[in-house]
Image (cartoon, rainbow, N blue to C red; front, side, top):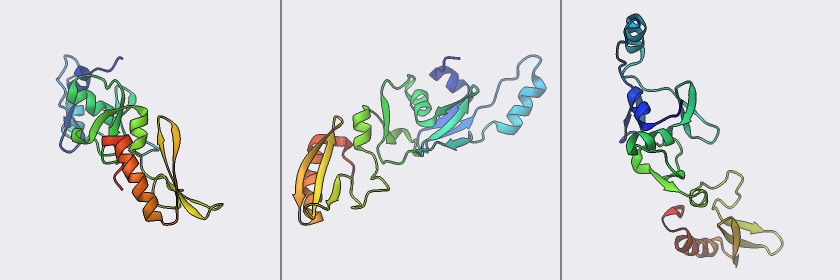
Length: 176
């Protein structure tokens, strides 16, 4: 089945304020009265079960297939499949409120990514250089790393990074 906004809206409601989905009441089909009534008793009006994907995004099952909930939310709300990646503005991949979703290129989506768990400085784009014994600031733009310099103090490295990040990443700059 080719998933469309129309067939999504047939089976689920989406609350754009909470970002959650609920099952709709099904029409009672001829010859399926007991099945449809049983389904409605069990599921209609209840939250659609969500499963957390390994990167924190939520998935929901529709039409015997799992879909990313943020992509389904976009389709339900706007009526079309998103033509690019979707970015969660606040960095929380489980927050599917429509106000938190925006179209993004893969590069823009990565600009707004969280600091990696193996980062030792606590700031994305800042690392300690053992060789020079200084803080190294860098930024990635269009999949290319750009060096921003070496700094004695981490605060100076952060200041340099934030200035360039705001300029190059714009609205996708990750708030520290």
